[in-house]
Image (cartoon, rainbow over the protein chains, first blue to last red):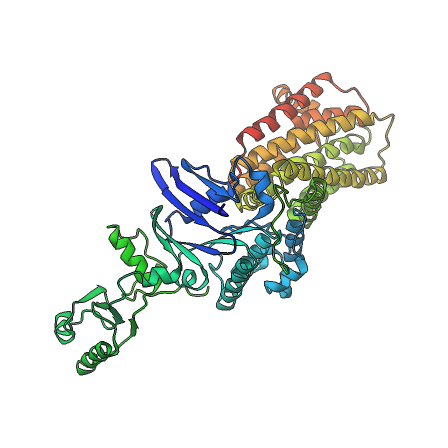
Length: 326
Length: 258
């Protein structure tokens, strides 16, 4: 029995199918990332697993239990970190942890957990006085205090600063090491790549592909060089020099369909030097998840409705973006 | 998590005993209620100030020799209403809007335990209010004359159920800010029309019938009869019972958790 079983799950809101015949499994001791742009159906999927959404079709099982019909048996064994927070605005961190701890027969020590998430310095503050990142840390701690066997973390590092992200990722890895099945959603490819054992790529409610980050990144298409340079280069001229097809995949982002051998890379950089052009970045061999994601969504013939990890104000041609700390 | 999570044997759930969950939730409901400034203002400051002010400044046509004789039972009714209706509606409305209720739904805390905890917290707050107001009433010269404590307690229970049902109905169907405004509006309306500060007898006939049909008016009538001088009108019991039946049923049917 897998810890998580999603079988042809479909969730409809009126005529709109938020999740469309989605199937995947998750095991104890692994971090499973549901990756996709905003509105891909990640939260709906997780909420079906938590028992908040009734599937229109298909089934979901968590530890073999139906999350709605067997809710009472399931709740002691799961931990949930919601995107919205969902904590009393006037409660203090330790009070919240003690409250949640008192719901479980064998909880973690609230004091110790508060230290683990690095919140001892704000023990006198109430939830509404905490920063976004501190709220996320507390929210994570609340999901973990009952020592769950399955933890659902919806966008756990959203609006968290760099140190906070590292801390949260480390905690997530530790959980998996202790045998917990961690299901997290993210639209951040970088995060999925760093923290997940397995990635399930979802777009418009459908499964695009799943596998380990390595499998996804090395699956085909590795015979190419990608580089960033000023937009609107003379790709024909470069193609002649390289004796390969050159494509500008997005403004300022290029792909050369050639084996990424040192000699070929030298040929590329020589051509740039001769034309006095700067090189922004260079990737050879192993692809980043984003490349996989974009290629996969192209194969299905659809462009993602929302760009992956794109901040609305950052609309330049650079395709690789990270969410900045806020 | 200092030790690896052991696999629970069979279907053994890792939930704490029900009474422990209920006690912890009751405790936090009380702490958070007493920490909210507007809640303390509403449930303690306003009744205490109203009782003192109108007892000492004889401007309200109470129809009794000493205003406090009329005001004390009325303000007790007001205190019950402020806790069970307004405080519950506002707090629950925001808890719902901020996803607190949703999040609690994924923990071993059941809806019944949550409701039980809210009820227990209400009872405790009301008990504190009653103690404070009785002391204040005595200080202002109120004296019980053969009070019917049983009738007053029964009416308080019925009214608490009716008001809490109404409060939860508002909190569970309206946006939090609308609930906040509506609860305060209803509070003011029932304060004026509820026979708490102004005797129902002073209202125009049409308005009086309307007021007597409200749970606040009925509660005040029972309190006046039970704690002060006079009779408890039978229709007040009917009104309280009907409200106590209808509002929780409506709340249970219409409450949306998110």
